[in-house]
Structures are given as C-alpha cells and as structure tokens.
Image 1 (cartoon, rainbow, N blue to C red):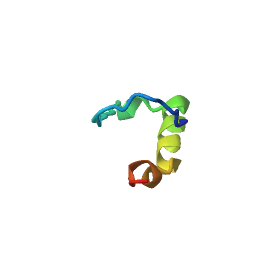
Image 2 (image 1 turned 45 degrees about the horizontal axis):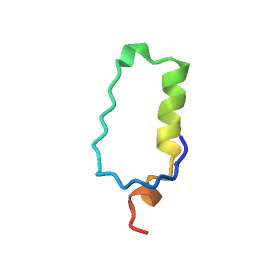
Image 3 (image 1 turned 135 degrees about the vertical axis):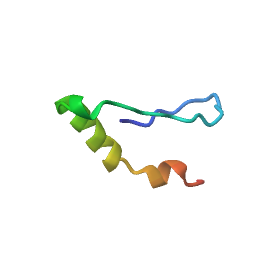
Image 4 (image 1 turned 90 degrees about the vertical axis):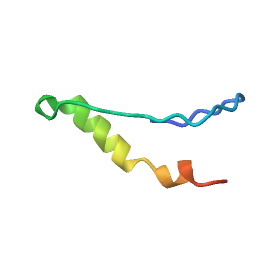
Length: 47
C-alpha cells in the first residue's frame, strides 16, 4: 500500500473488507499483514 498525493479534496469514505476464512491463501495473508503493518495513526491524525 502506498499513499498517493492528489489535488482534488475528497469526502471521507467508509471502507469495508470481507472474505471467507476457509479461503485464506498466501495473497490474503500478505494483504492482511500489509494492513496490520501500515501506520494508520499517521493517516487519520490531523496534520
């Protein structure tokens, strides 16, 4: 996951993720690991 700069301000959008636990493969494991390691506090804290 990378942060991209943009010039157009956007409204906040809710994001929902769902998957079947029975279908957990390497790609899903990698994706979940990336989400858990991302510095979310920096994203949601005011600058």
